[in-house]
Amino acid sequence: MAVQASQIEPSNAAPEAPRHVAIIMDGNGRWARARGLPRSEGHRRGVESVRKAVRFAGRRGIEILTLFSFSSENWSRPDDEIRDLLNLLRVFIRRDLAELVANNVRIRVIGERADLPADILSLITKAEDDTATNTGLRLVVAFNYGGRDEIARACRSLAEKVARGEMAADQIDKASLAGELDTNGLPDPDLILRTSGEMRISNFLLWQAAYSEFVFLDVFWPEFGDDQFEAAIREYACRERRYGNVGRG
Image 1 (spheres, helix red, strand yellow):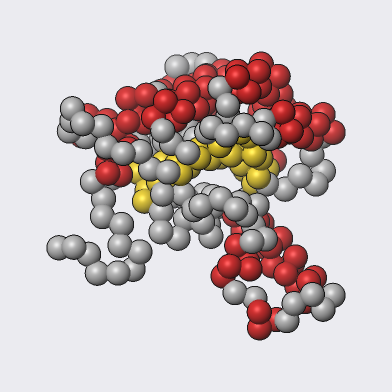
Image 2: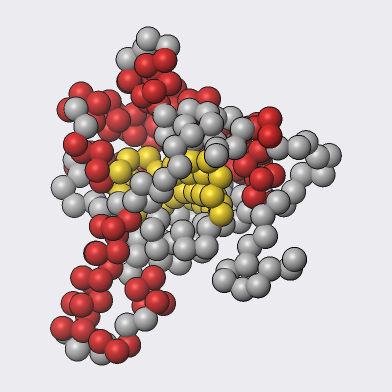
């Protein structure tokens, strides 16, 4: 069952924020359809929720915020919708990069970059380069990203190292594979959120989510704001993370 903000009991003492939060931003199209609006308007409103989430994460003391912005499977959508999504990425970087730099946010983009439009690649590089020395919130954008693809690419990289004689096959372990993932150097997410009431992972951070806590929210992404984000953190704070060990009870 998905969590509603009203289900979380208020508390005067705000719980400590998780170090790394990842969000599957779902429901833009359904939000728009419910209001008789084109899907493009849902995506546009979704960008506003991205801005709110980034600002909230910075204020709330979250160290890393990972956003699933465009799946490698999204290329199967209609051409006009793909065009709208790519244009929104262009607008977001061009319009918001200065604010992100000023707020000490560091940007990292994960996902397959081969065959992306040249101007998109240029904007991604600029965003990463312009924020490379920032020391505040780390904003990780999963773009043209798929968890299975990421693992397959990591395996190919390790296989190539073995073929070149740089390592032996029996040296491959969990750490070496993790070191080849797009998220190399980042801690795994403590909390993964998904909006829209859907309860699935949708090929997102498959390796990294091994011990993540999940909170599913019954709001569409354009409706997601500070209250919903705080509700998810409070729900997370009620969980006991055991990592396979015996619990306290």
